[in-house]
Picture 1: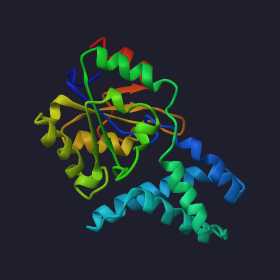
Picture 2: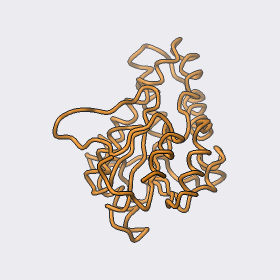
Picture 3: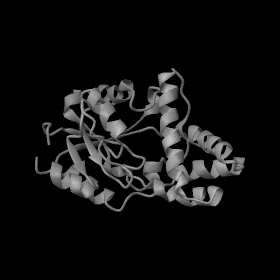
Picture 4: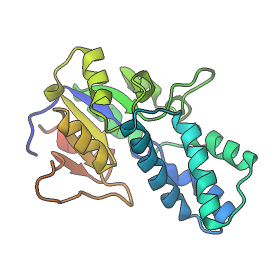
Length: 228
């Protein structure tokens, strides 16, 4: 650990709290290989960053559907409108990882303020993915990048949280399964905690900020941080 104990833990949602591997059967059906999910998710993240850098914005779920259609064109697979609709529905109903609830409750009981910050848009009708996963009640506030029309890791996204909560960036820690998210938060003055879900690992490049905490899941992170 290289940072002081934060007061506010800011949680990414997709792949940090809820399991994107639940989408794999759809990719297996369409492409004959469920591992194509990872290719699609990488494209989705890349293009979310690209449109933010270009001064544009689009709904994350709509962008996910567009990325699926694009991937189908690249791979010579016909992706129908109902396939894109199925993906969007599945993105809103992903289950939580089994370690999440217990880890969050331990952190909350340990005196941390818990909020979320997600690329996913708020639900205009019905429940959000976090509500459907049964986790919404643990959090004090839930923030979406839609409020600033920019995707992570834009500095504006992290400022949204600190401005709304009226806290200094140094009092916040971004908890995410993605190094690009912790780098963005640390560049905005927060500390960072990396959850090494399968397929994720630290980026040990000299000159880049390294996570202040690294843990395989939220139970392990809670054990580390409540000892601070």
